[in-house]
Image (cartoon, rainbow, N blue to C red):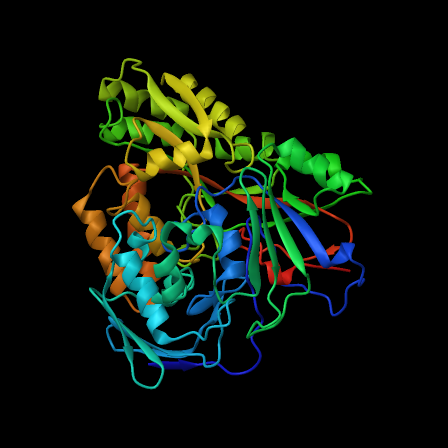
Length: 502
C-alpha cells in the first residue's frame, strides 16, 4: 500500500502544555508581540532527542526537530521529513521517501544517512529511553532514490505514529558533540536553540530557513513553573503568556480581564498503576476491590469541577485503541469489602505514590481522595508524595512497591505504546501475563479496521485482572493572555509554530 500527500503542509512543532493550530494571518508587529513565554510544569531532565523520551522534552523536540511524519494538534498523522511512504502486506517493511532540500540549523543538508544514524544510535544505546519505542526495528537502511527502509521484527500497524515522535539529528554534529549535544543542539525544525538556563527556562528562536510554514513568533521561551498558583499569577501579571492550570482555578479566572481560560479534551487517562506482585496486591480480589471502592463520578464532580470524563480504559477518546461504549467500573463499597474478606486482607499498609510537583493538575488532591475511598473499604493506604521526575524514574526502573497515581498521554496518539509500557513487557508491567503479551502482538499485526476489536480484549483482560485501575480522562485547562492566539492540542504538547498574537 502506498500513501501520498500533496499540497501545503501545516507545520506544527511543539511545546509542553498544549498549543497548536489557530495562527492568525497577522500579528501586532511590536517587539513584545514577536515573542511568547509559556509555562511548563516540569523541566525535562535531558533534552537529547536520542537519549530521552519524555512529555516535558517533547515541547522542545517538536519545535527543534522533525520526524519522518508529524502528528497534528488534532491527532492526525501527516508528512514530515518524508513526503510519502509505503509498506508491505503484513506491515513489517516500511519505505519512506525523504523530502529533498531540507537543511539542518547549521546549514548542512539532511541526508538519508542522518535518519539511519538517528535510529541506529537509539537502538544501540541501552540507556536511551527512546529505545523501547523503536525496539521492533530489525534494520534501517538508506536505499536508492532518497528512500529509507525499515524492516521490523514483527508487523506493526502504528509505525507511522511512532516515527513522528523521533526527532532526526545530524550525524556529524551528534558524533562530534556526544553528551554536549544538549548544550548546542541542531535539528531541522521551525525553531532553533537559543539558551537553556537550568531550572529556569529554555529559549528558542525562529528558523527563517525552515522548509515548511514559518513560525509567526521570533522567539518562544518555555519557563519552568512547577507551582500551579504561580502559573496562574504569572499569566495574570503578564510575565507568562500561557500555562496549564488546575480545574479548581477555572472558576476563579472566569471573570478575569488579565487572563482567558481555555478548556479542551485531552488525550490522557488518569489511572492507578500497581505492582501486582507486591504484598497485599498479589491477590486479584484485592485489586478488584480497589477499583470497586473508588467513586469516579464524585471525584470528577467534587474535585475536577466536572472537567473530566469517567474512563474504564487506559487511553482517551481520539487515541487509537479507545473502544466506544466500553463500560466504566461501578462503585460498590460492600462488594469491595466482601472481596477483601475473601482474599484474607487484614489491613496491611499499601503505599500509594503520587506527584506533588510537576505532575498532572491536582494529582495530590486526587491521591488523597483515592486514599479516602480505599480506607472506607478497609484498605490501609500510606501516601507517599514526590516530584514527578522522581516518580517517573521509579516507574521507569520498575521500583514501584505498591500503588501509584499517574496519567498517560501518548504523544503518538496510539494505544500501542500505552499497552506496551504498562501491560505488556514495559517497565510498569509487573504481572507479565502471557495472555496480555499475546494480545499485544495481535493488535500490532492487525489491520487498522480490526485493531479496535483486539484492544477491546486487552481492556477486558485488564478489567478482569485489575492490573491497573483506570479512573478518568481530564480536560486540559489553560490560562492565557487575552491577545494570544492558539488552540490547545489534544496531546497536551504546545506546537510553537501555532502560537501567535492577535
